[in-house]
Image (tube, rainbow, N blue to C red; front, side, top):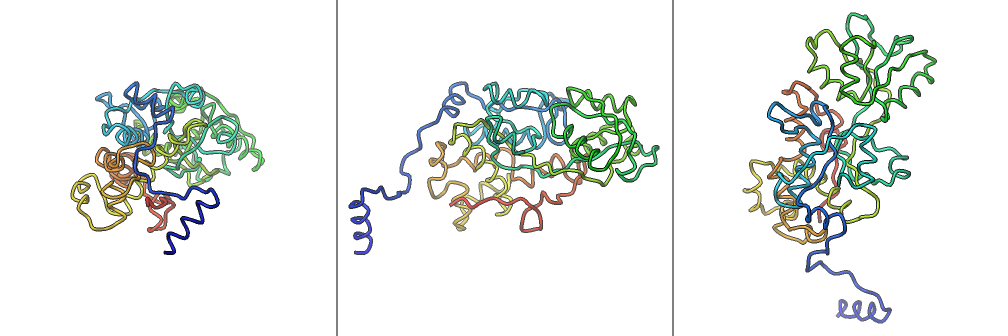
Length: 343
C-alpha cells in the first residue's frame, strides 16, 4: 500500500520516479564513432618504460597501454581493437581536443587548467606520482637543495617544465633549464652529458635509469617537488564516453580489491558475492547503463587483469623499473587506489 501511495504521489506531482534500466542506453557521439571505425584510438608515449613503450616485437606495452586495451575490451570485447597513436608531450592535448584520438592514457597530470581551460575531462587517476631528479652519482649530490647552478634537461609542454621553474624560484636557486620537445630527446641529451640533471616524474626516471647502459652510475634523488596525479583524459561534451572510460579504470581497481584476476575471472562468474556478480555482469544492468554489454568489466579484466596485476607486470619489484606499490596500493593497504562501488 505504501509503495502504491508513493507512486500515486509522484504521478500527482508530475514527477518521473527512477527505474532500473531495462534496455541499453543509446550510444553517444564518441561511442558511435568508435564503433563505426572499429577501434579505440589512444594517445601513446614515444617511450616511457613501464607506462608506454614499443617492445622488441613492436607491441606497445606498459600501464597506459593496458589501460587502453581494457577500454577497448570493455567496448568491443576485444583488447586488440586498441590502436595507439604516438604523440609528443606538446601535441597530446591538441590531439585529444581535435578528435585525432579518443582517449589519452599517457602519463598526463590532472591539473585545474587542463581540466577547465583545455576542453578536457579527467576521468580517473591510474597512477599517483611526483616530479624528481635523475643525475650521475659522480656529482656527489644527495639532495635537490645542492643543485644550484646545475643544468636541467626537461621536456616542453609538461607540468615538469613549470614545476622546475616554481621550485627553483621558491628555493632561490639559479638553474639553467635545457628544454626539448620530446622525452626521448631529453633522455638522449642527458645520456650524452648535455645537462647535469634529468627532471620528470619520479616513476619515469626509475624506468629511464633502468634502461641506461650503467644504471648504477645514476641515482634518482629522494626529493619530490610536486604532485603528479596521472589520469586518463577525454574531451568535454560526451558524458557517456567519460563514464565508460572512468568506470573501466575503476573496474580494474575494484577487481583487485575483490580478488578477481585475469586467471580466475571465469571461476568468479559463479561467486555468490553480490559485488563480484555486479562487477562481472552476472547481475544488474551496469554495462547497459553506459551503452555497453553487461560483461564490459569482465571483458576488461579477462584481457589485461586487475590493476595490481597490471602494475606488477610493468612497474613492480620484479621489473627493470622496480617500483613498490607505495601510494599506488589499494586503500585497504594504506594506498590511494580507491574505486567507488559498482551497484
